Image (cartoon, rainbow, N blue to C red; front, side):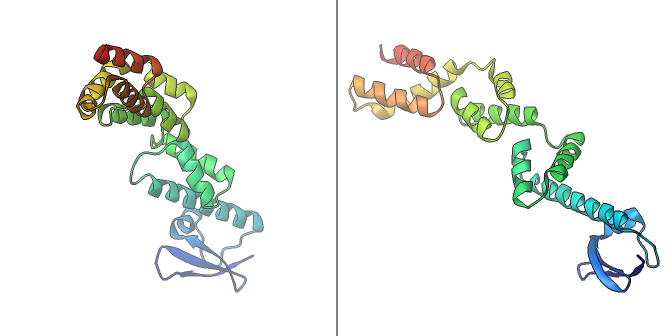
Length: 202
């Protein structure tokens, strides 16, 4: 097969490649330059498939980079996003390798940062943080690692003290139920909640 014509598309970022006088495929300009494609060049089907595979890989890499523009993502979030866009598993795996090599995706760093924000800014308990990280695809091993030294009690006690005045018109039993439910919904363990309630109400 002979490349008989290469013409730029309107956006200037892609080109149309013609083989033996007929349109064959479109390519990113970067791929054209990487493989040195030019008019008159003789190529075979294996070469075409290699070039198109490289094109698909670059598309996946660019899609992932765009997805990372707004905030950090987990490996699972990247995988799910690329699957929705129709990329094959082998392409997705290479994109993950690419992102990891440049330090753009790291589940341990993501989980540490996520937990730190939830603890400091939202005063969430470890159970809720664990659940949210699990939903984002973080492994149990990483979740346990980042939360192993978390002392939830002082945080829960501070939160409870701030919430307590809103129950001033309720009796003790009702306060016990409401405050306990509030803390559990925020992700604090049963033992921690019991300790806080004992501290404040007994």
